[in-house]
Each structure stands twice: as structure tokens, then as C-alpha cells.
Image (cartoon, rainbow over all chains, first blue to last red; front, side):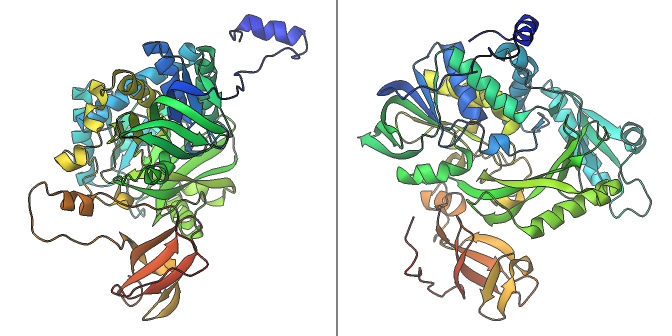
Length: 418
Length: 96
């Protein structure tokens, strides 16, 4: 498949855009592969891409039950950041952010990564202290962080609620200037094209329905398009991890929950950054099409249904209007729900599983999108080397029994609190 | 909106309730360090894609804890009762 460039654009423009080739093949599944990745979202595709590119393993299939990026990759609020405090999280997400910075060039596909800055607002002295601590931890790990006071926030973002009447007045905020957003569909398409160009088979409409096991190994996966043999197998199925694991008799420290996201009618440019509310749960940015993209809390009860409840919509809107009063007359264009694989400590799980040739990539909670390239990078390493990369050594499944949990928010083993 | 049939108050909208979580977990005896039973109790969940026994706190009502059987794939509420009650699976439902 041809390289995209200004020359290919001119050439295709002159021939009436009739000769563009498809961006990736639509192959029939082969009888077996060295590595089978279950899940054709961002993480699965990134894993296949880095397996082929970095580790030279190209006999790889990505199995997707629907269409590429039709799960959480296409259902998030596209925020990318690495503003974490704990080392095991911070260094991993920072690697991911560094990969984001080069991803469009690496893929020859514009993922529209925009480093517009992510600002977390603080609404009390205690919260400012906590942000100072997190910011200092970030800077010690080489991550950019700036603590802003109320006047600096006001100069940068004038449209917030600075009135004296505000129930939770703004004291300041923690800014990560290198954070921002990316175009989620482009991420899935760019990674799919990149992996396909390296020889990876991307097989859509192929649902995994069962497994053939011999001893403590998985020999093959049974799918809606036949049985496919596998040398190694990786799960990157987000909210459905628990369901697939149950077919193997495995139980995980994960609950599946529904998280809603929203897009408003399109507006002229208004929101220049990613801004998050610190007195509730609300995060806001504006897409290039003009729609405001935002979200809030989980619906709080376990769910595998990709739709949410009105009560949560109401709650999210209240948070939004408390932060930005001018949103109050805005009309919603769309909203949707995605199924989060909420881990019991709020941090992801990437590593080996109790089954010899099965590797797990799950527990992404609210934050899988930003991790897409980093997750693929370390998961590919884990699968290729049969051992975790130093960047995901702390994200292993056995951290729960070892007592080395990564509870960034210090809220305990309750998924709804993360 | 989900409607939960509280055994004390009758059918009420779920926004009166706070979700607690999985009702099948039993606190183990003893306090052995690194006891796998504790790991299982604190962290590990069945997370079924189908009927799920769970506890809700009727926090804006009678303030009692209610046990609910709910299909978490469809959000349909299949039964509710007191925490010690047995809530059978309706015959129309099959296990996942």
C-alpha cells in the first residue's frame, strides 16, 4: 500500500480521487498464527504493530468481533496525558506520551495529536497541596507539570466560573502542557494500516467463542470464522476481559462498568485546552469539528450494556455547568456508553496470566485511550520475550496477591471510586 | 431508570440507592497474612455477563441494605430481597 504524502495527494486529486487503494487488506484467517491478538481496538492493533515492527514477529492476527475501533477506542473522550504520581504508572504513561508525540510520523497517518495542555482544577487549599505533591512527583520523573494559581488559571482560561458565589471556588490548577487530545478513529485506522503494511492479518467480524486447551496451554481459538491455531495469545478486549476469562475458568480483579461520554452541537472555537473539574468528575475539550467532548463518572453499577442511565447524564451536566456556566444552554448532539474494565486498584494490568501462553492487557478503567501506543509497546515486549518490560513490571496481575497495589487515588478496592 | 423492589419500601427508582457491589463475597475467617481467601474476598470478582447478585444501600429511603438480582448485560432487574434472602433465577433466564 502506497505511502501517503503530498505527492500522492496531488496525484490522486488529478485523477479525481478514483485510484486510492484500501488502507488495509481484508484477509481470510489462516489456519494458525505465531501470535493471535484478541481485540481490534487501539491496544490490540498497537500490540500487533510493535510486535511486527520492533520484535520482527509478523505472523500475527488481530481478531475483532465487530469493526475496528468500534469498542472503547471509538467511545472515549480522546484525552492523552501522563500526569500520574506513582512511579509505575507515571513512567509507563510517559513512555506512551512520548510514543504519541511521534506516532503520526511513525504510522504515516495523521492521528491529529494535539498537545493543547491538560489542566486539572483545584478548589481548596488541601487540593492545591495535593496537586503540588503530584506535580513534584511528576517532575522528579521527568514529566512536565506546572502548578498555576487562581490568577494564572483565569488568564489562561477566562470562561470558567470565577464568581464569589461558586459553591467550589477555583483556587488554581495543575497543568501538563504536553497533554492533549488525538483523533480516536484515526488512531485505530493508522495503527491498522501500519500493522497491515508489516504483514499482520486484521480479521474483522470474527468473534472468539471458545478455546481449545491442552494442559496449561491454549492451542487454538474457536471463532465465528473457524478455528485458528495460536502459538501465543494476547487479550486486549477491555470491558469483555472478564467474559473471555470466564470461558477459561479464570477470575480476575476486575468489574465491568459503563461509562458515558457526550458530544455537544458544534460551536466556534471556545475551549482551547483539556480542562477537568476538581470538585466533581467532569472533563472537557473541543474537537476540531467544533463539538464539545466531555464525560464524568461511571454509572456506578456493574454493566456489560453499552448504554447508560439518565441520572448520570444529569449528574455530569451539573458538574459541567458548575465549572463552565456558559454550557447551560448548549444542546447535546450525541452520547454513548462504553464498558470499562475497572480494576480493583484503578491501575491497568499488563502481563502474563496463569495460563502459559496467554497474556493479559486489561484493567484500563477510565484511561485506556491515552495508553494506546505505550500499552502496545510493553504488551508486544511481554508477548515476544515472555517476560514483562521494565515499564510494566509493576503492572503485573500478581500485584494484588503480593500486596503491591497501585491505588493512585488511595480509595481502596472499589471500582466506582477510582 | 432502574426500578428496585425494596422489600421494606416497595418499588423505587435506583437513584434513591447507592450501589455497594457483588453480594456473593463472604468475609473469610481469621486474618492470615497473604491468605488467598482474603485476596479473593477483597479483589477477585466473578464479573458475569448475565445475572448478577449485588447489594444496594437504600440510602435515600429506608437506609437498609437490599439484595438485588440483576442481569448486567440488559440491566433488567430479576428480583430483590433482604440480604439473607435466597433470590432464585427466574426460569426464563439461563446462566451465562
